Image (cartoon, rainbow over the protein chains, first blue to last red):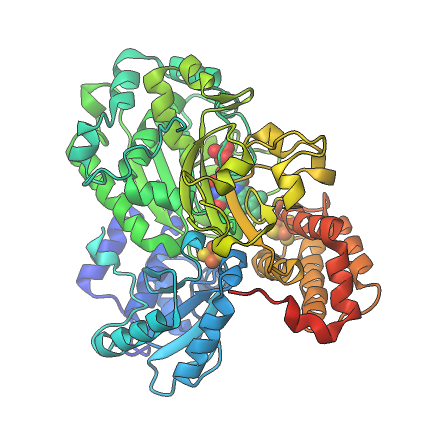
Length: 181
Length: 439
Ligand SMILES: Cc1cc2nc3c(=O)[nH]c(=O)nc-3n(C[C@H](O)[C@H](O)[C@H](O)COP(=O)(O)O)c2cc1C
Ligand code: SF4
Ligand code: FES
């Protein structure tokens, strides 16, 4: 992962950013802020440091405060460092009714951390979140762009093993914008 | 077997691709509208269909479209609301994931009707993989001349873009959505002006739900009058229902409006009954915001008539004994469910999602969460139930946007129908662990 001290997009990413900006009318480029923050978060370590936000402000030619106020409003933007693999467990009604509290307890036991914390090796963070629109697959959790539904203890164990092996190469907070646009 | 017109092809292999979608009649509404109809005629068919907004409020779509201001030389926009964050609702995700072109087709036909040169699909950030599916579908449509300049050789040109949000339920409220699309915090705007007059970038804008826009295609293909024959009374057409909770077959079902609730819960065609043969305790019929009803009131109205899956039947009895169809997020709770704990999850949700602009909502949701938290933890105080009642009453109707009401109604209805459970929590804290659900 690139360090947070020297944040600049490479040529390829800048091209993508310019493509995004063209989606809005002349002078309305601020509309690209949220998509660009997603890219910045993915590229610069899975969270938005003040330096990252300042850089995004400079790209869009807006005031840094305009970026901070947006970044702090939306729950998908992390303003503090998180693990490489951010595990977001839904805790709302349908998932709760089908056992989300047990899923969280099991994760806490397996990883030796509490909800909201990150493992010492920086690999996993557990976070509880509100309804992710996957209530039919309750209980469920999300890692990066992937949904994992109808969870059981065994499924959670298998997931952790998978991410532990694969996660050495890849950050799962990366939403993989580049392959889409 | 009810009629299906929205997701009838969901199991066809490759239906997510343009080629297979077209082989199954896809984009016929674009051909028909752009080549043989005026924009006004398209609006007229939607009016005749009786289609009502599928995002929750059920406002007649044709009427909404006819309110759109058309000052000369000013851009107009269509914005699709794919924010889908109302707990219990996941039908839009299903439609977009399985048949993305059904939405793109609807976007083109609807934009033609509204005279919009540009449209945006605002999709919640957590549905990132679905955004990718939509982007691919849009790329295919451009390559086939269905988007871009002079669509299918006609005068009509149109660009459609996907915009991802970043996790905020409030951005489903249409003016908050527009703020977010402009790159700001999702704070709802004070209305008027309504988006039809001053919406995106201050221009006239229509905001419609994914399912609403997708329904425009069959309406144009079969004609508004034919569409209006499906369903019952003013609840015309079909509706996607997201079914979850303690049922054997959770999932998304397309129903013809008018299916009895009892059939929906117990028949093999739909939910397949309650898990482990348990008894039904309560249902939230239209997403977390609508009043929860106990088994006897969801299956039958107060007058003893079977309750049907329609706007009118579900709201029969008002808030005293009825509920709402809402977004069609149908959550079923079995006899082991603690209504109090479930309500706590809702209260926590609304507090988390309040944008904080109005004090009754910002402070009230916080207080409701706090009081419910102490009740579920066994520290409830005598008078807490009345206090909750008082707080919800003071939020309702006193806020900029309907999130305040949406936070108040679940609390009011849970107390109205299950008051004794709340009082038991406060009276017998030592027994609380027995009130927990059996998973
Ligand atoms: C707090 C709140 C959240 C909402 N969330 C959604 C949503 O996720 N999706 C949606 O289509 N409509 C949502 N709505 C309703 C929209 O404001 C708007 O009425 C709807 O998009 C209009 O489309 P329709 O007429 O096609 O239903 C929400 C409303 C409120 C007050
Ligand atoms: S009611 Fe709540 S969510 Fe809506 S504008 Fe007011 S504070 Fe924000
Ligand atoms: S309640 Fe968990 S995904 Fe909706």
